[in-house]
View: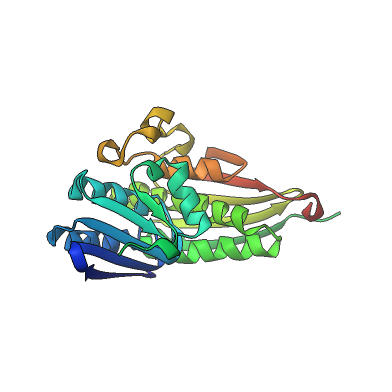
Length: 109
Length: 148
């Protein structure tokens, strides 16, 4: 397992999770646990900082489905700074329609 | 005449092996000079197939087993074969998300079939054979002319 998922609560109940390393079927449960921690704070928005996320398998996408279904349609899920290959996986599977994709310079505040 | 280069390694069929399996394929792809995009797509494809073997083939069936990963450079191709001893399972027959399902919002999505979908999209050849009580899944990527 080579994933670090760090949760920080920002002003306006924005939950920011910084993902570092590789998100696969071995590390997805850690990511899911972090999403559950964030959900418990009833965030207005969830921001995933992904610039240091080197790899994401479908197990990671499944946690995104879980996150959206758990938070409900009113809570936006932001993907910030994702590397091109990771972003490609998100768009190829149609997930870009349900999340907000932003690059690093437009990080949520 | 060049003989095909073949390397074989055996991994325990558990989730913790996924990192090492990806590293093996990454090394092979770098050695034949694949570009980063193609390399990532192949590594992802192998990871998805290996994950299905480990999670559905072994874990959910309460079976212990290995994943054999054979990397072969054939003329014009980098081929990765994954072999397992789980119950017969042909990933090429998996129902992958339809175009309509891919367009629906995350609130409505069912999570199945994404792994195989990504695997198939990432390689030029995706084949399955049942050989001697083993599942053999073969993923192939075409190489540029200079690597044939």
